[in-house]
Image (cartoon, rainbow over all chains, first blue to last red; front, side, top):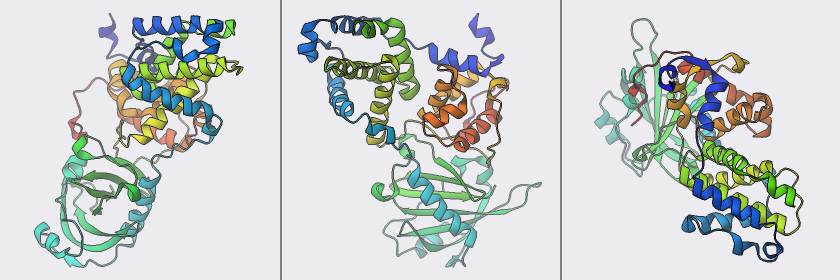
Length: 225
Length: 169
């Protein structure tokens, strides 16, 4: 029985194949396509191909068909298709990594989030309380020590600084958390926590960097753990 | 032309559907992707274009359709791994890795279309992972570091209960 073997380690490739091949197309849809393919051999099809496409899933199909026609023209161009969806995230990550390593003096030294929030009155948004616990329980063991103004991609941002205790065995380290008003055109597509997205993770200069958007604020967490 | 169209039977269409599922993990979207890419292929053929390998051609059309929509919809359909620092990009012997079916099912959606695609090219199409990275324009180091994280996290681990420390909902 398959269930009995679901907890047994198997060859990774076989597991991948099984996962992929367990999906099958709807029989109806399959038959309709095969019929369309069969008809494609007729001279009538040659004259007017569109007439022969079946009408299944009409609404979304129209969008796809329009896209397909455009893409048929641009197929050669697609060889240069750039899938660097994470480009902006990497740029931002590099920038905050530099800020983290430089660690310039704090503008405000305080362990009170409210005090720090009050300090940052030059921002065009309100600082939001940290969601660090949601990233990793280990990171939740930290304390705020203050903040300073900085910039991300040319826009004024806030840097909050934390000391992480790290527990008995590990050394303590510094964590920086950045907040800026989120601008999709500037920052690119980023996970939105209200939509259930999980932060982007970027490794940069030996640091762990997490990026996400929360309540319209771009939040970046830099950790040395 | 007769030969070309005949090559596309139920088996090939299902393969294309499976590939579409690898990309989008949604049956409706996958069905649409197959539909549209087949239509594109037929339109091309009807205007006299010679397509030597219909399945490969349609797969490429399908892929472009997917990534075009994926980029445009401005949403993160996948979740990135969140891991402790792991910058390991040493070569990995993927051929000798092991995993439980249930672990793989758990993380399959999490992997993201690009990683799943590499694994598709490796497991189904028979390329080496290096070849797949070149064909799919993914830096080898990126793929290797993700694979290391996957391995650390799930390979050969006995089944554990849902890990809600990772902040998943």
